[in-house]
Every structure is written in C-alpha cells, then in structure tokens.
Image 1: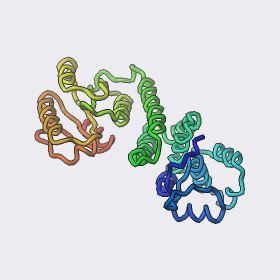
Image 2: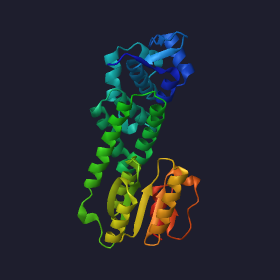
Image 3: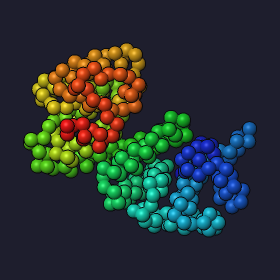
Image 4: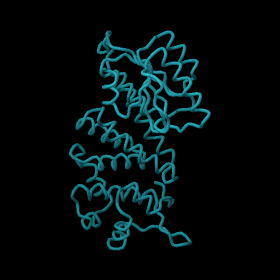
Amino acid sequence: MNTEANYSIKDLEKLSGIKAHTLRIWEKRYSIFTPQRTDTNIRMYSNEELRKILNISLLNKNGFKISSIASMVPNEVAQLVASINLVKTENEDLIDSFILSMIDLDEPFFDKTFNSCIIKMGFESTIQDIIFPFLSRIGTMWQSGSINPAQEHFVSNIIRQKMIVAIDGIKSSSIQKQMQTFVLFLRENELHEMVILFYNYALRSRGYRTIYLGQSVPVIDLERVVHIIRPDFILTVATNPFSPKEWKEFKSNIDLLSTKTSIYLTGKPLQEFEIQTNKNIHFFKSLPELIKLVSR
C-alpha cells in the first residue's frame, strides 16, 4: 500500500463527504489517523489513511458510532465493511464503496458493489443514479490532482467493459425490425465514451436498431454511413468544450446532416450555443426526454 501523503484534508472531505472540521475532531479525540505535516504545518494524508477514512465513513453512515469504530482493529473494520448489505444502503454509501474500490484497485469489491446496485435498482438506474455521479465526483478529484490518474482509469475501464457486456447481452431478436435506426457517434477529438455507450444500451434495450460508431468520428465518415444506412436519427454527446472554430465547423456539419435525418444533441458544452435552425435538430437533457422526443 502506498503510504506517500498525497491528500489534503479538503481532498478527504470531498472524497468521503465528511466535513474537515469533523475529521479534525476525530483525529484529536480518537487518534484514528496521524497525518504528516508539511513545512507550513498543513495536514497531508496517505493512501492508507484515505482508505481508512472511507471505511469509517461507510460504517458511520450505517449506524456504527465513531467511538466504537475507533476501538476496532483494522481487520475488524474491513470485515464489517465487507459484511454491510449494500442493497439496503443509500446512494452516497454506494458511491463511497466505489471510491474505496478505486483507491485500493479492488475489482472484486467493485463487482460486489455494482452487482448489489443492479439487484436493487436495475442496470439502467445503476448507471444513471450511481455510476455517473461517482464518475463526476472522481473526475473533479482527478482534475485537481487529488487522485492518481491510474486509479480513475482503472474504474473507468471496468465500467466501460460492463456497459459493453450489457449491450452485447441484448439479444438481436429483441431489436424490432419496425423500430427506427439510430447512428451514435462522438465528434473528432471527443473521447469520453461513457454517456453515449449508455444511450446505446438504453435505445437497444427498447428495441431500436443502433449503429454505434464510437469515439472521434470524422465528419466525412459519418456522412458515408448516413448515405449507406439512411438512419432515422443521429445522436451525439458533447463533453469537451468547443473553440469558436470547432463550433462553427460542428454547426455547419450538423445543419447539413439535418437535411437528411433528425439530429439529437446532448451535453453541457452544447447548452452555451444556439443551433436550432430547423425542425430536425433537437436538444435533450435526459433519457426520458429523448424517448419522448423520438416517440412524437
């Protein structure tokens, strides 16, 4: 286990959901952890201490008093965390469990938590209500340098794999011939695939035919596919912000494609711009909104 002190108390507050003031009280009253100090007397915490705080947070949220937790040996804490019935916990507890699995690079624990979520709420709700908030939370920490990028890649690749398995698990016979066809793609230099993978799953599970092109698709390739397939709809998700030049090119391409088929767009970067120049271009913010628009 890495013992290098990489986390400030503010990092711990963001990752665990426990206020920095409470962490200082626990540290002073129960000697649960002993942070290192910088030359300017700033507390810094190791990977092991972060894991311990996340475990304590999980137990505390499930009814264990901090005084009792403080008296436990590490193995006892670990056994209690493993024994918690995750099906009955709230979303924040589940997110804490995913963060623990990320910190320790513990795939079996990730799988246990993920499978518990699916039993409780189904695959679609697990992704929307648990996984996306979890990814948002660790994304903020990754950007600030509070977690190792390798840890973020570890869980992102597991989640991506699970989405692909779920998509593959939808039998071809369940895709109804009379249903319309979606082409799903990400624009050039757009590599964040999670959301569009989710829409691919959601649409296929509802019987739509989907043509999934994936990441960083050149416009000329998209145009060729549209010419061959003649889809009913094109769907894309924007995650990266646009430069003025990128936006001008994107808008021009979307306007051209909208003369041949309906375009569905989502993502925060798109909300900054006005692009609805005709009836074939639609913005949506959620899966229910997309299904409602498509069903008109």
